[in-house]
Length: 240
Length: 283
Image 1 (cartoon, rainbow over the protein chains, first blue to last red):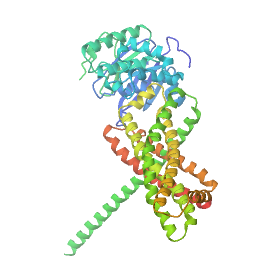
Image 2 (cartoon, chains in turn green, yellow):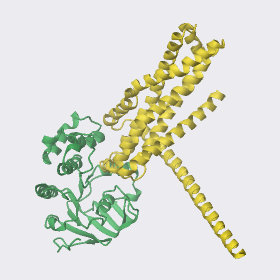
Image 3 (tube, rainbow over the protein chains, first blue to last red):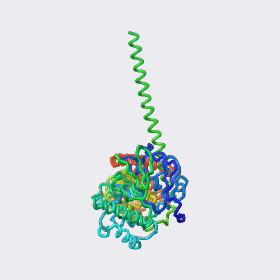
Image 4 (cartoon, each protein chain N blue to C red):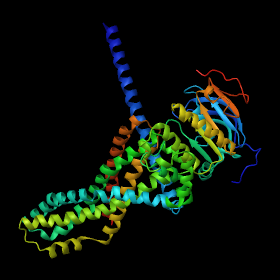
């Protein structure tokens, strides 16, 4: 698939319903959403409102229950498994609560895994890219540590380095700063602002809207199973 | 009085019906579950075979070390246990058989009995059950935990096919491991069996013993031994991967998935063995 022009949405949802991955009931109905290249979206919603499920669907990891979803201009429901896997190399995803590390691997191996797999290279051959990803996330000193031995603050950051290793065009982040120390939380916000400045599309979910005030370009809210796009510098409703 | 009796009869009838319905629902549920499992296992087997062929050269630097890791885990590390088991098997089964045959002057049947019992039946079954116990259960626990912790979705998010990364190496590793372990088990068992007979003073020269064994083997034994052990390995790997990966899982579900996988594998291996017995009869 070729590169998109700057006006073609990277994600386009029309009347999408999102299922809960666990309970198989509808979490969010009627999502109409268009994400343009380079935008920085902040999506707010209370715990259990379906933010994770929405990000999973928007990243092409789960199918929507209804509606039309296009990622990089391709209808998700019509894409083959091979196309989906290829498409995912253009998308980074940082999971919440420790980033879902591969616990038996070291930090460097976690970051290198996707590079080795997609380029059919061994660890030494991708070392340069791994070092670059570790350096920008300030993880160089922890490269040889096993992921499971790190605290959740740092695990979350390994998740970011792993997602950035493939140089994605779109980065999804599921509550990246939730439960982190204030210094780490600040680091994430600064880093994402810089990343957005480098034309990477950033989409982050949070249940603490106030903390992300003024950080993003566009804002949306999930409340009572409804999707609502807010203004660019909207007054943020209080999230329960 | 008659009203009371009829009321009692009605209550009994209702109880009988509700028991019948409960039993019927239970049987129906089990049957549907069984059909779903067969469908799921068949699908996973076909998808795995397809991916193993089409992605044979994809990500060799990642997948080949994983295959070697599985060979070490399900094969090499089990060698001491296989040697111990083979020694015990040789002592208990073969040694005793040699003694009995010798007592009745039927030493000429020794080769046939050994080939039938050890080469065709006990060797493959023992190796398969040993791999199931040591590596198969570990498979379910590892994959179930990975599923529960969301690592499978993390792989998908990185564009890595979970079946290629998690299932294919395990299937290849287990199939080759059970084949190799069976060969070692048969060899050790036949040797230790002769050793036992020798210690017991059975008048049977090593040359005669191995000549009888070689005479009882037919060419189909080699082909069917390969097919049988490979199919045991593939079956155990597919069932354990299916139980670990196929459904959304919480950490507390992992132990249930492990016991379920072990039960299914034991039944499946015995049924497969029965199929091969039929093949032997026709061969």
